[in-house]
Amino acid sequence: MEQHRTGRTVGDIPDDLRRLLKQVSRSFYLTLAVLPASLRGPLGLAYLLARAADTITDTRIIPPGNRRRYLDLFREEIDRATASRLHEISQALIGPQRNRAERDLLTRLPECVAAFRSLPEEDRQRIRTLLRTLIHGMQTDLRRFPGEGKNGLVALESSGDLDEYTYYAAGCVGEFWTEMAMAHCPALRDWDAPAMRTRGRRFGQGLQMTNVLRDVAHDLQSGRCYLPRQDLARIGLTPEDLLDPAAVERLRLLLRELVAITLNHYAEGWTYILSIPATEIRLRLACTWPHFIGLRTLERVQKSRDLLDPQVTVKIPRPAVYAILLRSAARVWSDEGLERYYRALRGRIGAVPSPTG
Image (cartoon, rainbow, N blue to C red; front, side):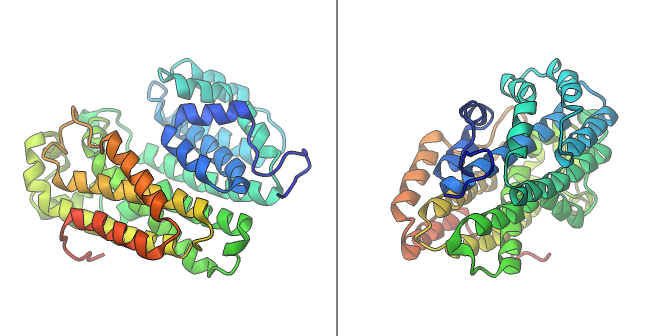
């Protein structure tokens, strides 16, 4: 396994930061644990740094303008060789945090950045590029959605805005993941890099579209409507109409169209997964699990009568998650076996209109 100047293997991540990862995201930690060893360190640190930026963005007790400034400072810290403003960022944001895991993340931010700086330069540059892109999207969101509650509700204007949002939120992560995998997995060195970057982007956008549809009611309560205003107007709805849970039946037509777009992204993600050699079992599983869990979540979104009720959380039961993990693990080395399982999950969603965009 490749070594760098600190003497640790590239796949290493300090035990205390590994525990922090498990604390802030059990779902990603599971994906991280199954990844090839050489990818765990850089991808784990990239996740912690991205999650820190997301925490800055979501600290609502701090005015949006101040949050944008702290995001700028954080981006500058990632770009520079030595720390200077991390303490200021941490101290300004720790106090307002009610979530213990996020408070611990901000407290340990200097350690995360120090671990990042110990990575090989090639990995640091890939992570810098990712964080610049993510932070650009976060700052755009803070400008676009200045309100913090449903009384200041703002919607994206067009389907193009939604596509752009899903790129900056997750499509860029798919590109980054592809670049890291190609750099660290010799079996992928013959991949068509531009084509696989595009598929990785689409895969990430599909996962984010699922989040958008699943979380629509909760986002509305925060003053954010990611369903485009132009699309809502086409079916006789306004963003404000969606604050009434009963409007879900009037939303069905647009919902089916958005599910179709999401499934189109997932189809590209499926091609991506099958392009991973069957010998790369760990990498295949790390991609298959979120894909299949996303499909099951999309099924529940499609069928939910409570999608616009902020008191209801649309999610798949834990036993169903465990079943996906086990069944996909049993089939991961077989393209045919995985394909059958994928078709079964896709079939549960039913027929949807062909995407027009």
